[in-house]
Length: 315
Image (cartoon, rainbow, N blue to C red):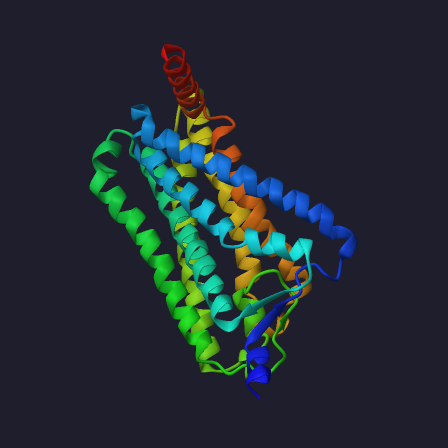
């Protein structure tokens, strides 16, 4: 009896075992994206901390985004790589809930942080003369802390609500992680009661409230750009906001598709590919998106490499 109970409390993550010919390709791509994520985001954090010229609100928030991305993808990729190289992964209930809690906390924190970064860009473009006073270090620390706290609060609430629900269906997930929509498919009755409604409302808040902030911020930015007489000023404003808007579209598009579908309509087969995009690909692309046309970051990287080279030469 004990053995049976233990088996019941383990979740079988099928991953991409239904596509064996695709697994070696996915393994190589996921590993490459993971290495790019760790390298790119670590470099961004290092530059933002080491270079005094990058001690501005924009790079302060960008360093927090880099930390979130590195942690987010690290909570997902190691078990995914193990799954792609071997048999379907089995996780105990506690391990599954822990993975859900960590990935949901970091993903929710990114939702809020992207909205905070949009507010920062709107203040810089719409109120350039007052920007230094508006974006004070104290306010920046408070907004960054609120992003982390919002992510943790949402994750703790969703995980706690799910943990109270009885699971009736076999613990088989056609997925590579313990993701909330996939787990809700296992809940008795399909999750269509008041508890699931509360969880859905929490997902609406964590996704759509920041989305409203993003839309309002970029609406204000668009009006400010249209009112600029200088073409150079318009190009600079568009360049400043364009990279962030690209990152927002990549992350929010896939997250909204995944988390705002009714449970009975969620398709795990399609969902795991969408999840692969926003948990693995997007964190690898973000450092490139934010630095590809950013001259300040490139100059900071050259200064850092130059100082390291001089340090080695002096030895």
